[in-house]
Length: 197
Image (cartoon, rainbow, N blue to C red; front, side, top):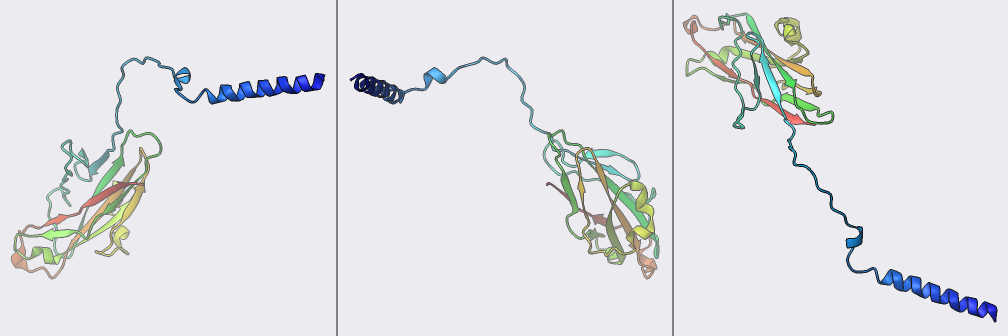
């Protein structure tokens, strides 16, 4: 008899527990809480790549404040003169100066074969431009660095956060350049593309 009363009591307790669980289907307000917070500043990460040229060591950001790409003029020599049959050299150092959290590695690459322009004089046709990746601007004037490079090569490099990488350029004027082109000018455009890895 006693065990049947215990069974009934246990059944009632079980039914009460089930009813209690079934009753908690509405709001979860009992588990929510609110905490006040002081006003603060939220700052997005700054994806910044700096450019430093060989000759003047001037540094600029790759992207200007208005969002456009920066242009940086590289003079192959202080006078900007390239002589027939000889080569001149220039370079640009890229710095991964972002303040983003984590490793934030970037990949920098020459975006296309160098574009050459000469305002119709024909001088650009006698220019050969080679680009290579290096570790310092001091290496850019080393002719051996370009020995195996082709004018169609598009070098690339990986730059970790806080580090730098260098693209070096060799500009050569053919020994067969006509004397009538002496004093002519030509421009070379080298787009650099940087992406986050």
